[in-house]
Figure (cartoon, rainbow, N blue to C red):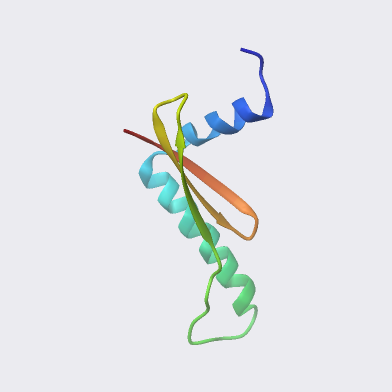
Length: 79
């Protein structure tokens, strides 16, 4: 199989374990909160994010991706 952007993207998700994926998502949320707080203080901030769950038929898995501020981190869940 030739190397393509799709092939690379599908395999990038294998970089994470469930724990490291969770840490990566939380870190993205905290980065967004830091931008909102700036040098001031706030009682709380709302972080916009999106979780996408999709089937990856070729691998027999489910792909879970979290996106915050245009950065996406994916993880394959074996089923």
